[in-house]
Length: 97
Image (cartoon, rainbow, N blue to C red; front, side, top):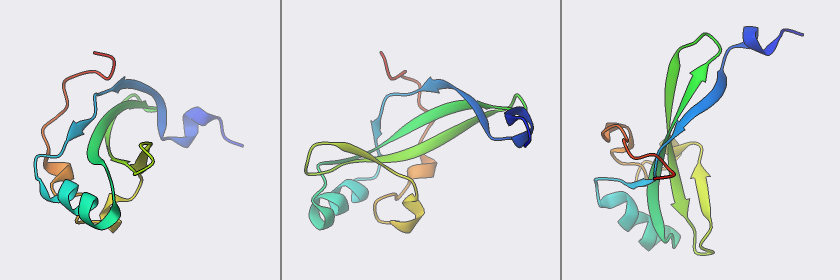
């Protein structure tokens, strides 16, 4: 098979930013009322691709009633949970700060 460097995609994670609340109140309210969620936030993760470019992946994260956090890989399937997700400003606070 091809070496990983020729397959494209992410090579390494360079930055993980602190989870933040969405600006809009709707997603959290919807999550609480309809799904029993404790919190709805998002995390920005920056990766370097094999071709050297950087890519920021914005991931919706949900705190379920069991208090564990889960990533929502397809927020587009739950538009009421992800209103404004891709309109948020860039994250600036690192996860470990």
